[in-house]
Image (tube, rainbow, N blue to C red; front, side):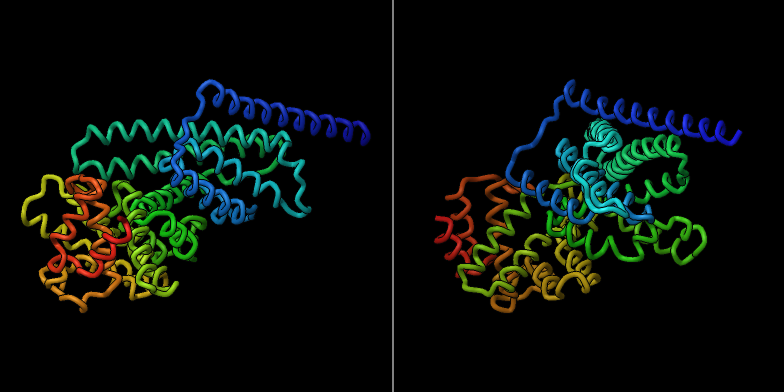
Length: 430
């Protein structure tokens, strides 16, 4: 009788193993079929490719299996959701990199590259690829709705869109995991996984906003130094604490309210170009490596204060005089945000951001500083911003060619801008 029972148990386990392999191969081939039927369209600009490679390396180094779902699935959901919105089909590459990194680090044995070609790895890759296509399709629908919506509704639509994108990823991965758990007689945490997906999607919304307003450097700094702190880990990974501790609930509410401030995804190339020009001027002035780095970071963050303005006022569209005056406070707002994160950035960088709207003749804002009283870094960012705005037509500025842009700067030399920096920029770019 005992031998018969053992034989029956072995046959049952063999059936489960075969069924699991069939399921994994079916999901894997589904992913391949999706790619063949709808080939991905990849943005091949150097900035996009470089950003994707940077994130790929980051995920390869950082992703690892862990018993705490909030420390693994939640951050990965946020990164993948944000990437699908910012980088589109490049997210497939990031998904495969992440899964490979996790698979190679599975305890308790050393890395085995043959695991990358196992049925379960193949199925997980297929589920990830299919999910990416679904996420991109969902975001496309919300983008179309956003275009047709009135300006006051754009912020809410963007927030809901990112939430749904994150949930699509979370549901697809949870579904795959739950089926594999069924075949392997393991148990999962369905309700906690779904709740975690909601908070992870909000986390992804923040990453999208950080990338849009501050570029790659700001996003990585936020992810490593802010989003991985204990408070946000609690919000993302230990959802039950939100139900038990009133203090944790209050913290979660505060974070979500801050998230609502972020709406549109502006042209991130603008801040990157302002950063490049600012660092170029700093190098030609013979500043130290540290000073050049600080100026570059301030230039990259100089528009972050716009996140605290109403969405329709950020780009100066259909604003009246009072609203335009309020809009000019974005430099001051950005400085306040940076000073509140003084553990993340040097307080001097907040000064550079705040005073980039000052004019050399004292007619600027917020304090009406004159000449050398304006920090040199702020004077550099001001002229770099004006030059790039003229070349790109950014923020409602008339788009002109390089010669005309330089001529406009020379006209405003000594009034809006430092004459020495105007001469230097003219010399360098000519």
